[in-house]
Image (cartoon, rainbow, N blue to C red; front, side, top):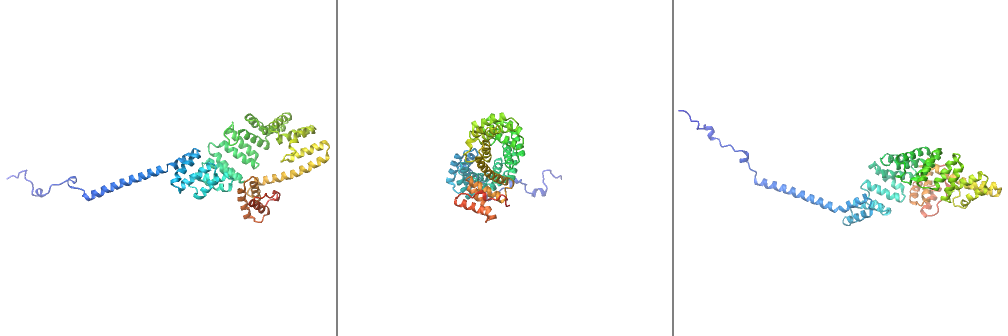
Length: 445
């Protein structure tokens, strides 16, 4: 008998029906509960963190507003905002540093320094402001390392390079100042101002040809001299004088004429007269010297030039008229005294000529001594006596703090040097400074 197709085999009939995972697998209730709590906790934590961040962001809003106000040079607003923040966060070091920076912007360096010394600096901006406070007080030695750190952190910070160059220059570190001036020039947008700085340093060091080349670059970048750190007409006079000292008097006429076109000045007219005299144009030179005296009746160089021209014509009376206002001045020059000596000789007044000769010789010795000091400062600025002279200069200019900083170093090197000891005592007691006559012309390194 045939087996029906509907009858299953014994094996097939005993196997259970297969179930798919979707139909048969289920997650235990405990695991589902724990997973939901994990998700819930994560959401709660994320929400809390966002809320905390939002709250912190809101609380720090006055601090951000203070920083923004500083960035747009609104120091009064910055002070108001940072004080508002500090009312709730009096020990926040960031806010205290911002307050110190604000005080520098408000030209309150002493108070700013007190805060900086308490909280330090948290950013290059803080360091630069800290240095700025010292610069306001002319404490260049203290500002120097701060500015050097700023340019190390921010090599493209043109303002820091400028301030560093000025600081080094004031301390007589001319070679270092030249290096930082060149770095300043290399930052785009600073070429004209940078070459003014570079030329001034080179001129101070007696490198007149190099200085003239730098000044020429200024006119290449700013022919109308409108973007400089000094008035344009003053820069042009400085350029012309440098050309004259470099033996290029003919080239000095153009900048002087440009200076006079911007603003007539006694100095420009006087220097133009000097240049024209060198070119063999005495009448034109005398006309410009007279213009200088008209603008500035006490202009020494122009009056001396006119008196000398009168003496060359044998006119002692006219020479006296030009020099008489200078006779009793507080800063009589050897050149003026020598002209009075020549006048007395021409008039046949030998006693007066002898008296003026003695005064001329004394003034020449004093001026030669000062020239030697200036040369020492330019050629060997780090020497012992150059620093001693610079300390005396700072004190004479009303900057005793910087003078004391230099004197302290000198005493460490040579605590028995009489001049330095006398200078230190005078600074400590507020007494008159010792005479520079104590400084030997043969310098000690």
